[in-house]
Structures are given as structure tokens and as C-alpha cells.
Length: 88
Image 1 (cartoon, rainbow, N blue to C red):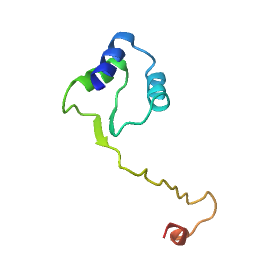
Image 2: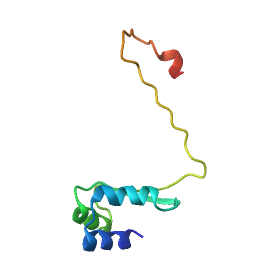
Image 3: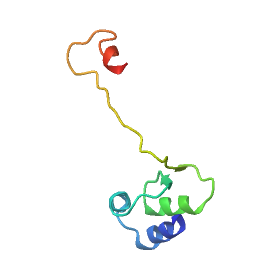
Image 4: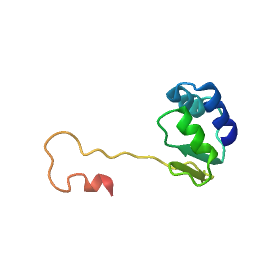
């Protein structure tokens, strides 16, 4: 899949943000995941084609999705450890 994507990015040179959006929302989820940090399509294509390339992150999704939580300290008057109870 990475080779096919690399070929597409090199030959078609789409807007990289549009390609990333379509990859995220336009296809089903796979257990094996890969991400690349790149400034443009040519850089992304080259990164996908080279094993061990810096800027490539590969992994496998877990069986259960991870829970995501955000804790923001607020924007007003705070004091040290104000949100500790919420965090714990």
C-alpha cells in the first residue's frame, strides 16, 4: 500500500493536505498504520519508498481503540495544583 501511495503522490502530485484528508476519511481502518512527515508530495513519495527513512512512523493498531481525554487548566486565575483533583 505504501508503494502504491508513493507512486500516486509522485505521478499525480495532489495537494498534500487533500491527499491526507482523503486517506484519513475516505477509506476503512487497517490494523497496520504508517505516517510520514513531509513538506510536499515528492518528499512524501521518497520517504515511503526508502526503508528506515527518518520521518516515517509505523505501527499496529490495538484491538480496542484508546480513550482520549483532554485536561485544560483554564484561562483565568489559577493557583498551583488547582486541577490536580480533576487530573487524578
